[in-house]
Length: 278
Image (cartoon, rainbow, N blue to C red; front, side):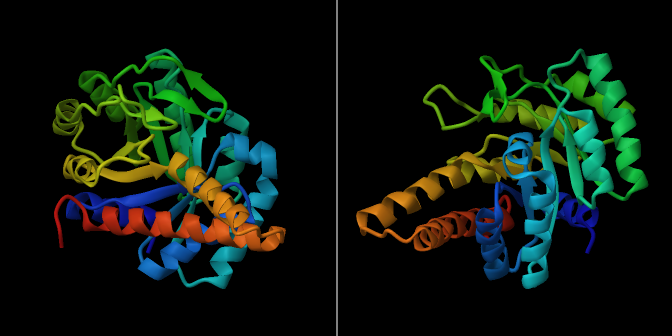
């Protein structure tokens, strides 16, 4: 089943697909193991920093390798793309979806660039995600000290002109570790959904309470991004290996992968339940 159809069904059926960042073969394999266990569609995401670290060709190779070796329904996504040439390269390299993050730009410029990229993506049957509003915290190279929440009226204008398949919004969500001051504005999310009435995306959603995910999904969120939580799981796996005095790098990586898989599986199953228990 095509990713766009899966997302549209998630929107109508009130559940969500998890988007999980990977940075090398081991992390990709760990996420896919969770997807295989749950038998749920899963999105594997790469950031621009991961592209610089591991190489786009290597990331694509790793994804294709784990996809070939598994019967899991997985999809490859560029997360928070701001480099226009990289976005175009991903569109032409077989990615299932790409995101353009023009939230730092003036609204009219964000609209113009997003519209052009959406056209390019759709020519290749690639799902296109855009962002309106600005998510705080740190997402690899992108650092911001403030959160500029999405304006529902601007979101509607943006959507009408761009027609993205998914729209990422800011409701107080912050990239990076969860902070005491971070609070999701679900009343704003409801206003955005009532205004736009289209599939939404939430970034910076690691370590939230299950009820928060459920409320978000009830308001039209179809894709929930998890990155920080998997990094933490990776580090926890290394700590556990060192505690066990493991000195074989392969075994250390295997143990870290198990930690990532477990955390990913928990999230996939939670998102699949949607806005209510099933």
